[in-house]
Length: 517
Image (cartoon, rainbow, N blue to C red):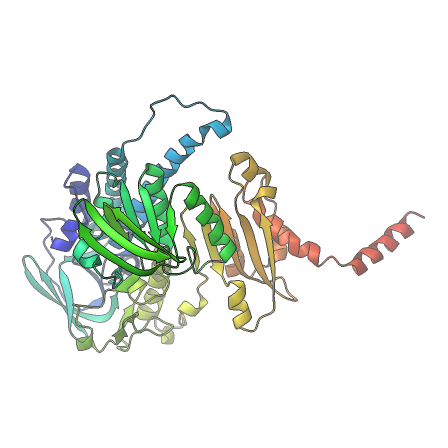
């Protein structure tokens, strides 16, 4: 196993040993290739796994290459471990709110951060079976553990521990993902820092933690570690947090972070880091004030860098730049035999986006247009996403500014959770649902939800948009009471009420008066 892969699975306990046995088996023997593959996939993250298993299920001859850990970021250092930690932090925060609900928690109740992380590793190992080499082999995929690099426009060499393998292909898919980026902050590299790829190897809680970057990763983990008791400094170059979201949505989360003990240093200027005795020193200017703080660890969450190095894309005639591999709407690269999917080529760096893109690769690579199925394109994707802070912020489609930039007239309606019975009863009434509707129609252009379970609730808008169903459909759908998801119906009812004009009311009044005769 590579040194990089080893760094992702510390400590070397029984759970991580089980994980490695599944996603990078130390005794794995790469198969001997027999003939040309219909498709060879490089990278066994979400995009690569879905591409490979769907192709194999359709009867294609498929090879899948992974040099680190199958399951990619999502399983090993992303969605799975982070949501386990977030859930534990939320449970502890709920205990501290017990008095709000008339409950008395005995004195001395505490938590064990080491046990929190052990639980995460245990659950990650359990889930890892789904992405394991042995499982995919039984599903008909030839699994190659090692580094893959192109030797030409239709050949890949796999360099494994027991020798090299030469694979020829009809089509190929590059699904190598992305890695954590790091800012060019003076002194940061020398002082050392954590990313999402290394923070889940911690077994002890850092008492002082600096988080650089107030995007989704930074906010989620800043809140979680603050809830466990770390003194967290969240440093962000822009104003506020989550700069891509509506300002009032981000403000609700920001206020909760502050209540949880996070010290926000936004509009950060001239950040400098140095390693000193007893920790790591950060100096930064924020809103005209100079801060000088010492922390035990630094977490960097400032974006993702596509993994395009080391696979000899140039040899295969595949163009790329700092944003990743260049693809067209069909996810085809500049070599028509080679496609790409997932974080290596997409601005949507989400697991569900990689899954959707894999489906597009399958249709376009294995069932080209002359076969009558037509081309699938990324342009048609309706992409929801969610930041898993508390409250969560979920969004799908356009923001109001996006619609305006496209020249669309839009009507925007917002309904606050403090008017939704279930949210009040749950003590989770900080948030809202917002919907953008094209003027003159009931077409939903986009929606944002800020709520404890926004990630679950946004799907109603996603389904409606995908199906071409408008606000009338949601308004006419019965929602169970009491649920927080009622807010979806309530917000579109604002649109319906706005279009119940005084003229219509006057006509109805005349009709009712006539009926009383």
